[in-house]
Amino acid sequence: MIPLSGDIANAKGILRDKVGPSETKRGTSTLKRGFAHMLKNGVVMDVTTVEQAQIAEDAGAVAVMVLDKLPADVRKAGGVARTASIRIIEEIMDSVTIPVMAKCRIGHVYEAKVLETTDVDMIDESEVLTPADEFHHIWKWDFTTPFVNGARNLGEALRRIEEGAAMIRTKGEPGTGNVAEAVLHIKNVNTELRRLKSIYDAGDEQDLVSLARELKVSFSLVEETAALGRLPVVNFAAGGISTPADAAYLMTLGCDGIFVGSGIFKSDDAKERAQAVVLATTFWEDPEKVKEAQKMVDERQSMLGLDTKNLELRMQERGSTA
Amino acid sequence: MKGVNIGILAVQGDVAENVSATRMAMDELGIEGIVSEVKSPDQIADLDGLVIPGGESTVIGTLSLVNGSLKKIKEKIASGMPVLGTCAGMILLSKKAKDKVVGEMEQPLLDYLDIRIERNAFGRQKDSFEAEISLEKIGIPAFRGVFIRAPSVLEAGKNVEVLSKIDEKIVAVKQGNIIGTSFHPELTEDLSLHKYFLTLVQKKG
Image (tube, rainbow over all chains, first blue to last red; front, side):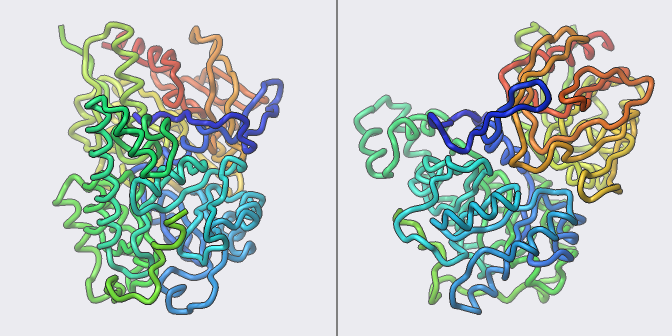
């Protein structure tokens, strides 16, 4: 089981107040990471309108992520991509019962503050939008609302957790409809975790210290992760997932759940595809059920997608050195 | 002696936490038996007790309806099988659920607990909270309540025992062998509620 503790001393996002006569705390790691645990084995869907959000909810999405444009359209439009219109986020919050997430630019503390004040359930500090700070991510311990961050490898994942991320997802290559990069990123993390665990199991403290330096994270977080043998927060797959089989494959690689961006609402059979991806994620262990899910979609209606090798814009590289 | 067979409904949500809490509670009580993740009607048919975890009630309900698990759980409840439902689990066990913002809901429910639920009763995630609560009636005077986008019980029928309240809102109930809580005992290290559930399973046995 993944531990839920992990608060830093005096995290500003932890608020103490009262519900009736009892003392309460909000914004603790238990509540932020716990929220992510409630999403496990589920599918979070990118949406841009109320109508899409309702399709997602009816299909069995565990949450929706509100964007101004789907990642594929962000890629096409070029220019600067920013957080979604608050009015649309609010309309969606008023029309679905499942959690509503929204994206802010990497390092953009005030876009995140605005989203927190809007009362979204989780903030995605996302490489799909144009970074506002090339050198720093947001110090997420200052927030009561939990954050999810993208990562391509163990170092990125642990650095984001150290900044207060309550959940991690692979970056993949958003808006391409190509699952290859998400597969690569989850395998990177898995391989590095195995290496970390073997050093820990061998009791080689010196090597563990040098690994912490290599990953650019604190020794204590490296030690905690090594003992667990997995990331200390919930870890989803994201970036380029478009079919039920894509989702099921990523679940077999040890992901806790799935984000689908352009894959659903850039296809011509969005409704069926949304249901099918949920079914495949839930019953990923059963090939017969995944086949049934795959049968619900038509490959001729999948988004065309892009080869990830010769892209002008590699979104995954945003914020990766910080 | 035959051990007890406890299942954790593993459609979606914090399944692993409930497996671990139930397993540890069993070990501490010295009860023989197995704890496993269950998804299909066949697996549910063999159970002596079921835990429905936290997660999204719409997702767990819809997918359990699709594969026939919902019907099987209803039959088992009718035959007296104890069930512990936490958060989404309590919503699923109820007869009627509405959302604080969106209003009346049409979602698949188990239709057992004679309660009317308000989903997201304390607000959105930012208002999720931890607080000390009490379940005196079942011998648990103090318990750490972890409330995540939690529901509350608006009305409880006369056969429903109210186990706990916070700020005048009902957050834990019992009817027959069925317990529902707004909060997540599986996210704390306190095993007392899972232990209490296991004693119900043993008594039924």
